[in-house]
Structure formats: structure tokens, C-alpha cells
Image 1: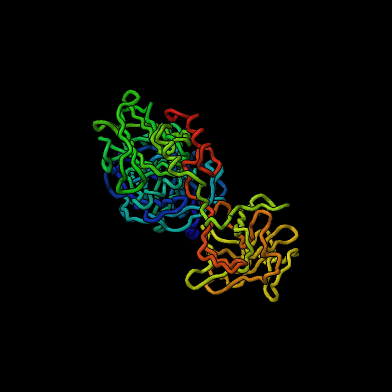
Image 2 (image 1 turned 90 degrees about the vertical axis):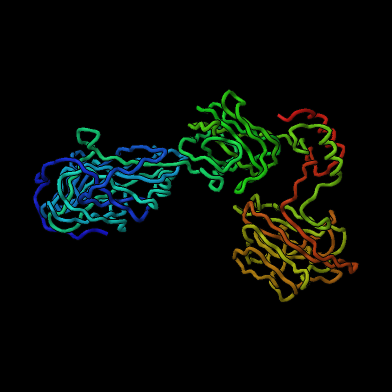
Length: 578
């Protein structure tokens, strides 16, 4: 939103003399990606209370632009003008680099310090306007002609122009808390525009970063606190090396171990083995705790550490890949300060009972799980990721193809849905289905229904494949459309049948008959249920399948069977885990 052009005036040399200091606030009520602040006069207010952590940031650039000097740059001038100076509109700009705000902190409040050398007209009330800005600008080249645009209004205030003053422009909590942190995380600066718009003669003259003394130059004051100050705001992490933290900006409480200010992390284990959490090398007397699962209330405590490496702390505990562990980082006797957190996961897959040692307890675990590992599907079904000849790996870029087979060494007459046990399939991230036709090599009895043959289709079939090895089948009875992404489909009445002499119903050399193909986004999981009628009139209902197999920790040698080979592997790794 730009202010209309005003009357033409002369140069900036008519700015009144500078004077004494007082405080003035502005309230910013709305946020945006770049913050623009309009400024006119000053009303007395003391400096805000400092937070537990703060940083003073000088502007990396400042300048003003003048309507009657549209192509003149004032980037090196000591004056910043905002408003209508003797009939000529002036805007001023400040830009602050936010990288000095610690990455582990959240901004809680902020204010901009400005020294007003002049204002006008004396004794009259002016309105301070705050605008969002859009577009980049450079201190050495910005002019009225190429100035950044002013977008939505962010706030305003009333001010009576008296003696020259200094001011603090307070950003309210919604603007500061989260907004500046978001800009910081995105590597973007805080851009500020200054404007006073109450008619001829209403303006503010502000010292720029080129003025002589530090106390008269603009500054951004940012107050911050620990972002992960509570268990409910724990920071999600994996393995980390020397991750910085600072408990001096945190509060105390919420845990069952530390006795000083604490911060919280939710660690997701990256292996089956031993997780080691260390605060060694931190600058104060630390304490450390770990709890089962993340979130509040806290789970069972896994350990509480005090002085394991000097005055610092270290913990180790067994984990499985994907376990979530709440980590409490604090101090002893109220101590706090900066530190570094390191978490590493050392694989120990032969520690079956997860006690940190490979011993007789693990052999008992192997014996108790003797036999084939579970597959995630009914024993009569076979679900596997498929890559056919000439296919892009994983079926298609960004997609994964799965094929479901009945694995009973028997003829399959139909795949169907019943009212009590519908034929269903679900995906964690949707199914893909296209509609090109393909040539068929197996005889089909599918007159009058649509047949799809494509390497990124989802459908039910009965055994048939095209000459390229692609499954072919029917979409009849499913609630999905071609070229559409669906989360699930189901049928409680439709069936896919063959006649007894159809070759497509016969098992292949591995004893399998293909019954379905599913194409999903890469990394997505699938699950569902099918009902099958075999050639000897045996009806199998409620056969479940799942692409995610349940854990099989006793299979320590990775051959999908728990047997004597696993016992031998345990003996070879006997002793404490790394």
C-alpha cells in the first residue's frame, strides 16, 4: 500500500536541530515475512524488561528515499527521514541480520531502538504507521524510484511531537514470538520501513547507523528463551554431534532427575543396539536423564546421570531402531549454562533381550522365537516389491510397486469381497492408477470389462500378465478413478472370477498366483484383506497382508529364520555390546 504523492518541496537540509532523549514505543500487531515499521513521533515509555537471553543487533543497511529527489541515494547520510518534510514524502528503511539469534532459542520479545533528532510539527499529534515491505533493496542504490513496496498495515500509534527523543519500538508477542525465529531459521533478515502520514509537516528525523556514537545508532534488541523448555515442546532429534544448548535461558521443572534449569529432546533411535547420550565437554555441572517414549507425562525413567565425565554427564541404554526416548538436559544444584549434546547409536543386533550384553539371556530369546520370522502377511499370501524388466527402479520415479500373490500351490478361481469380510486395501500415502491398455499373453475371460496393463497401476487381477511382465486386471467394484490418488478402496460384493480351464488361475513354478498389484508413493506402506476361492472349492477368507513386517529381533543373522545359525552368531559376539 503506497501513500499518494504529496506536494513538491525542496531538499532535506531544512531538518530541525537535534535535541534530548526520551523513550517511545510502537506496537506491531501483525506478522509477515518482512517487517516494515512506520514511525512518526514519540510518547514517553521506559525500556522493556530484558529476557533471560538477549542480543543487540545493529542494522546491516539503512537509507531513506525522498520524493522530490527520486533518483538520489542517501545510503551514507547520517539522517533518516520519515513523513512529509516541508511538502515532500520521505520513507526510511532499516535491515537487520537475524543470524545472531541462537538457533536453539525462540524469540520471546523484541524492540527497535531509534534516536530521534527532530520531529514536526511541534505540539501536534501524529500517527505512527507500520507497514510490511516486499522486495529487496541495497543501501548504496535504493532511491525513491526503486524503493521496496509497502504492503499491509501492521500497526499504528498516537504521538505528540515535543522535544527530540530516543525511542523503543516494541514488537508485540505474536510478531516477535515465532516470527523473528521463522525469519532466522529461513536465513532471512528483518526489513523495516518507516513512515509518518498525517499530512504536511508531520515527520520524524532519525539518526542512521552512520551517526557518531553507538548510543545514537539504530539497534534491534531481541529477547529469547529455550525453544524446548518443556517436555511438551521437546526438540525432535536423531544422532547428533556437539549440538549446542544453553540452559541459562531455560526454566526448571517437569523432570525427575535434574535439579537446575532443563531443556528437552525427543530422540528417535537409528539402530538396534546401544544409544549413548553425552554432555561431556559442557561448561557447567550437568545432569542428564532418559525416559521411555516422548511426550508428557514422562514415561519410565531409563537412567539419571550426574558426574560421569568430570562434572558432566553421560548415559547409555539399549534401543531398537525407531524407539523414541525423552532426553532431559539440566544441571546439578541449580547450575546452568551453555553445553553440547552428543547422541550416537552403536548397532548391537545380537543383543536380543536388549540388556546391553550378548549372553545366555539372548540364547533363551532365540529358542523362544524358533522358526520362520513373521512376514506381515497371512502365511498363504506373498507380498513383495516388484521391479520388472525394463522398469525404472521402484516401478516409476517416486513410486513403489508391490505385487500380492496367493502362495498355496493351488489354482485360484476368484478373489472377492463379502459383507462380513470386504476386500480392502489401504495405503499410508495413497494409490496410483492409470488407464492405458496392454497386450495380453495369458488367456482371459474378461469380456466387457476394462483391462489395465501398466507398470504404475493399482488393481486386482487373477494371475494374468502382459508380454512385458505387467500385471493385468480389473478395477470394477473399487471406489477409485484413473490417474487419481486414493488412500484406500474396498468392495463387499464384487468378485474377480475365472473359469476352471483358464491358464491365468494356475500357480507358477514358485507355486504363486498373482492376485493384486499396488502402486504407492515411494516409502509408503500398504495393508489390506482378500478372500480367495481355490480350485478345490476351498474358501479362504480374511487373508491379511502388510508391507511392514513385525520385528524379528531373534533373527540375528538376518536370514528370516530363527534357528541354530542365530545361536552360532550369538556365540561369535559374546560379551558386552559396544
